[in-house]
Amino acid sequence: MKILNVEKFISEEEILFSDLFYEHTNTVDFEVDVDVVENVESENIFILSRNVERSVDEYEKILNLIKKPQAELNILKINDDILESSFKHLVFTKRGYISVDNLKNDDEIYYINSFISKWINQQQDDYIDIVDLEVRNNNNYYVNNILSHNSEPGGKAAPFHATIRVRLAKVADIKNDDKETIGITVKATTKKNKIAPYNRSCEFNIYFNKGIDDVESWRDNLVNKKVISRPTTQKYSIEVDGKEYEFKKDDWSKILVENNLYDKVKDMVVKANTIDYDSFVPSYDELSNSAKILAEEEVESIED
Image 1 (cartoon, rainbow, N blue to C red):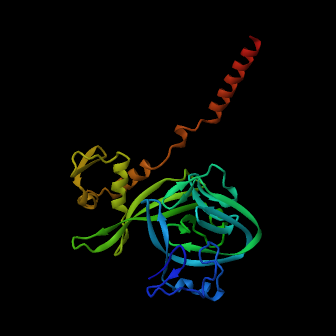
Image 2 (cartoon, rainbow, N blue to C red):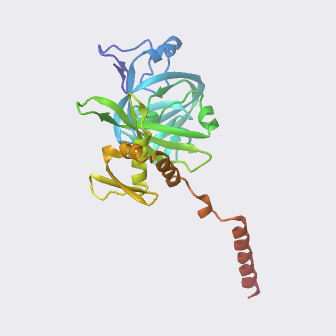
């Protein structure tokens, strides 16, 4: 495995990839040989990244180096570390990812595992060749100890055009009795949604031999929605059509099959996760009446 650290590319033999990065190996916008850029997908190269869900730093694979047109140069300095980038390069702050040209004086930038408020940002009267990184899973990477956002193929066209964007993140491994990894637990979070509230999340299991386990996810979801109760730490209980069914965690699928509850429980899952907009969004008549009452009160106050 080759690792890109803050300063340079290093292989297991500690060979500097000088053909790939020239004198600006410690900046975010690298001078890169075009032929190497086209072949980087076949390399097994990793860079230090941050898993926000688990609040840990880890190495993630570089999926692509994306060559972009020249852009105006910006220099961000924190302590002795300097980040040379375009104006639109995104760094992580307490407000989220912010482009360096939109940083405010009171912004705190994520730097060496903490947020720091002392930094210098200068826009230069110069241009720089741009090559961004596309990093697997975490969508970010460290450059000179500054956490930067992962580049996306096609620029902002894909996320702008999408109606729904879902971010998937690995939570944990699933192991069998022999301690062999047979699957993973995944957390899905809607980062953009034009047809429903966004930033909603759920977890589900993916098994290598059969894919996503829907039924297992239903149980966990219904527990969170208080539809399934837990009389004891070992037992679960669900009421369907007035009849109560008790079961242990591993017997959930068996209960659904033996009692022909699959379709009924599926409907319960849909109902538990459907938002009833009519319950909190006022109708046109209600809004009209409210406006009429406010207008009458305003007239009365003026007459008084």
